Amino acid sequence: MHLNFDVGDPELTTAEVERMWWWFQMGSIMDPYVRRHLWKSWGFCPRHTWIHAVWECELRGGYLLATSILYEDLTRRAARALRSRLMTWNVMVQRLQPRDTCFTCDSITDTKNFLGEQRWLASAERANRFQRFLALLKVTQGQWEERSCPLCLGGNGLVCRKHLLLGTEPSADLSQQLFALANRLEDFIESMTWGSKPAGLLEQASWVEALGWFAGWDYLEKLQRTHKDTLSRNTFQT
Ligand SMILES: [Zn+2]
Ligand SMILES: [Zn+2]
Image (tube, rainbow, N blue to C red; front, side, top):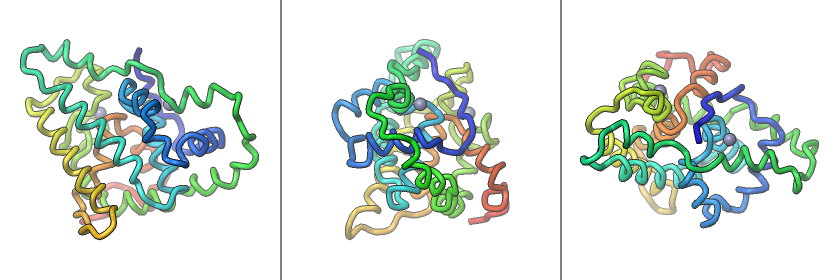
């Protein structure tokens, strides 16, 4: 099974909004059945990796809690999967291929429980303003831009999974770097719980870094182009 790297337009379709509401509004992303699927597929396809984060942020309260919990889990699993010193990279990189379909792509194809797109138009319109999502990205732009994939966005960060699968060699410390990213995500998740101390900008940017590594940065690059006023490069210094 190979990944479809085409992320399409940044906007959410009404079908995507409905399907994610149907599946994830009550925390089903934590269900063992769903999580097992997401383990096998390394999360969603590149488009739905980002779209799910926008959906959660815009329509579920402005936080990235479910996204961060899922990608902390996946990042740690990827770090473990790439830890072996006995295998050549050519063999090891195959572990990053999905072994299952994208859960959200599947749910859109399966129309038997559709409630009707009309009632989701207003939600889709709200999500597609990207108001909260852009605000979060703007605050941490100095961090994630610097830590983005050199081949996707010209940063100094890890070569993303897309480019690894397309044949680029990783840095020797990829596994350790992914463990470190998972730890930053853990600190960020902790900061969203009651009574904990706020996270620094590096930790606040960790979910962007993780999504970029798993799905590539094309979606953010498109968002930067369509929302130049907010996210154009080097206009925001931390
Ligand atoms: Zn998908
Ligand atoms: Zn890349």
